[in-house]
Image 1 (cartoon, helix red, strand yellow):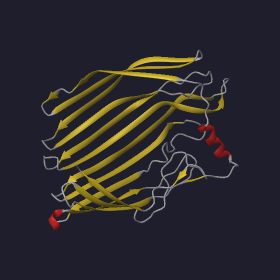
Image 2: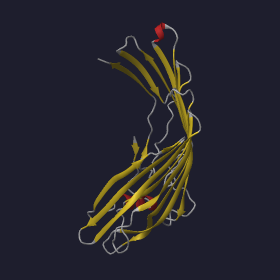
Image 3: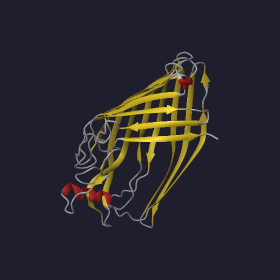
Image 4: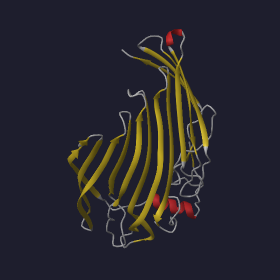
Length: 315
């Protein structure tokens, strides 16, 4: 469901429409990547992972603007086996993303560049893949992002400079598998903080949140249990999704919320499975996370309470 506002728009809404109605000149973007080298040499309990992509970027718009550049994009990783069930790893890769925004001379901006770094710990608690866990710290940095000059160039295009910079940091923890033969669990917690390291315009000052629509905290839990009676043909399950408050570019907020889910499964034969699945059982009213939510526009309700009966048959 989407709510739409009146015909008259305030200043922020007019700005939104400016961003949503760019009339770019026809622009062709060709990207070709070759992957000539991928190695995983082992040195005892240490494994090195290397991957190099040769990236050719060609963007052309008629006779007015052309950008050509070739580059090597590396992926580097290392894994250390603490023992047969636990390992530590670290990964590093570079980012390269073409842009279609233009500067005051109507030239296409250089690609967004940056780095993605991650370090983590993985465990296989019983040595047979039955119960796994992981914990990862990450940092993503993007540079050359478009700075909004808030004016048009001679060709009528909105003009930008490739001087913006953002940073995203956080961690994720996950547990999944079987606690017992009949009891399964999946749990995930994510923490994220992002900010502008360099301004991208008057509305995006240094130090403010770059991704307001991304929850700072998010937790998901699901567990199921196979009942020990009736020939073990019944499985019951339940879970939750929790997220902290979010916002949008236009400061339209969404408070934190909790959603409850549950399901029941019955398998009368080896080929037939009957399921009853309930979502958002508390019928919590909330809006989906969208970056460009504004008053009366782009406000989409999340899924209300619903129950589904499902029949699966294997031939």
